[in-house]
Length: 96
Image (cartoon, rainbow, N blue to C red; front, side, top):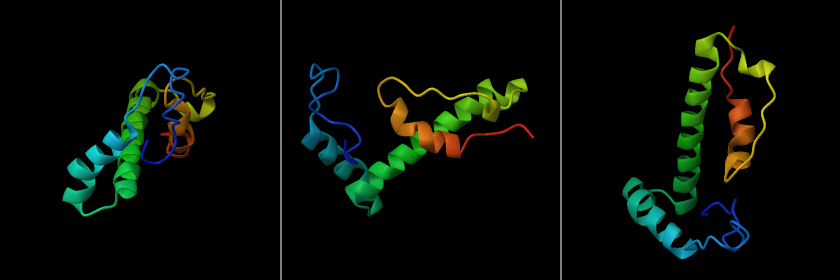
């Protein structure tokens, strides 16, 4: 929400209501202020950590099984999947 990636009015065709102001306030109170960052910097950090965790999961289900994820097609779908797809692709583990 804080980075503007999602439209808070149209999640699940408008059925899922998001408290945008509450999300911003929570990021500010619990992350940005304690770390001396802006809300935008903290939100970007959240995305970075989540993406790193996804890369770790990709490593477990591919490289550790002897597969090279760069030989497969990535299909991004669902909730926030497309938000992470490009960064995941750029940071994709590979089997040498």
